[in-house]
Length: 116
Figure 1 (tube, rainbow, N blue to C red):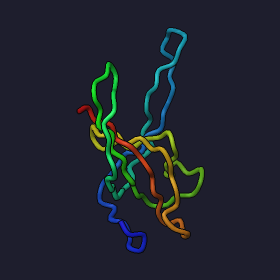
Figure 2 (figure 1 turned 45 degrees about the horizontal axis):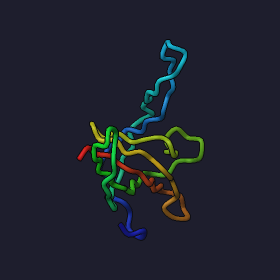
Figure 3 (figure 1 turned 135 degrees about the horizontal axis):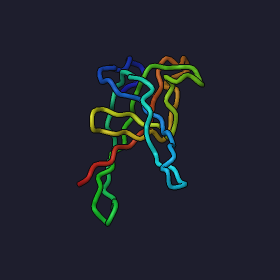
Figure 4 (figure 1 turned 135 degrees about the vertical axis):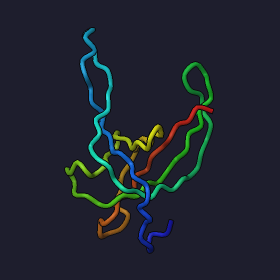
């Protein structure tokens, strides 16, 4: 994806943020709260295989996901620790950066894990 041409925002992704809820046993369980839908350009990168739970193999693929820019503090601006959902697919966001000096677009560096 070239930085000089505009991204092709053709995939709707739901931005979700983690939400801790009491589990009625003195602890907490993780849940996810949908913040809204963002149109994105999803570009796959490198992949690798790793061990998952009980040593089951997992395929991990890195992605660069480009969305429209939003100001800091806006619920429409993705942050590390959040995730995108596309149906059953989950993209965990690890880092977010402006795509260029104008801030019109953001690049989210994310990973998707798939059972191999």
